[in-house]
Length: 103
Image (cartoon, rainbow, N blue to C red; front, side, top):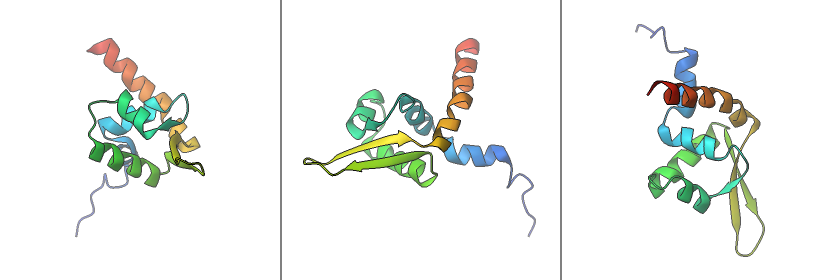
C-alpha cells in the first residue's frame, strides 16, 4: 500500500487540532481566562449544544484546553487554555488579521 506523502505534514497535524471554526472560536474566547460552559454558549450563540460539547472534548483530548471542576455546591466547571493551547493564539490572531485585511 502506498503511503500518502502528506500524512505527517505539519499543516495536517495543526488542522486536526484546531481545524474547525468552533475550535478556533473557543480558543479565542478563552484567551483572557477560564470560561464556564454557559458563558462559552453565550459568547458563541450559533454553536449547538452537541457541537459545543464535542469540540470542548476534542480540545481537551488534544491537550489544548483543561477542564477544572470545583468541589462546590452547586458544582462549578470551567474550561481554560493550557500552555499548549496558548501557543495557538498568535497563529489564530494572524489568521484573523489576514481575514480582516483581505475580505
